[in-house]
Image (tube, rainbow, N blue to C red; front, side):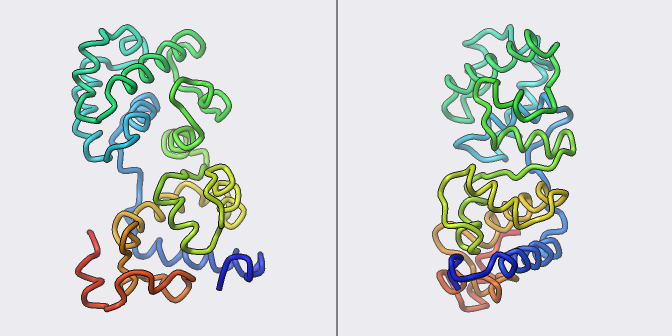
Length: 231
């Protein structure tokens, strides 16, 4: 059933059932970026653009050992910082972003990461997606992370027909209780990384296939699909 043919109430009920099933499938769903403070999570999330969380997690221990806080990173030597960030890709732009946001944190927020969306998105290189990651995982303030997996799965599951991250954030948020936004995002991301792949989803091993309007676009044989699933 296409999203446009489904009533709002039916879509809400289906979305919440799917989230409950994914909670059982991925009980360990969480932010996969390593961090010990809001500042570390903010920087790590900015660095995660166009690379993997694994690569970021290999880079940030060296980065934060050298620059442990906003004041230190704001004063970083550009060439030295770029060399540390080189493995994450687009390292010059990322170095500029993290030093810029660190300066803003020092100058405007006393070196601390503000727990407000409007303040976070005013920082260099920080959009709503990054802000919601930080709010949800560092401050416990519910937010929906519209990363590539959430965007893709929201369309496949019939929650939205939009490619606009803000629209997807709003429409997905309307389907789920606010308190569940952060964890629901993690569960969709886990599902996208482990089962509902971009090129060929493992439909035959998907726990929500019976509720998914896109079921069957990928591998439907249960044995072959199960072999595709990542742990």
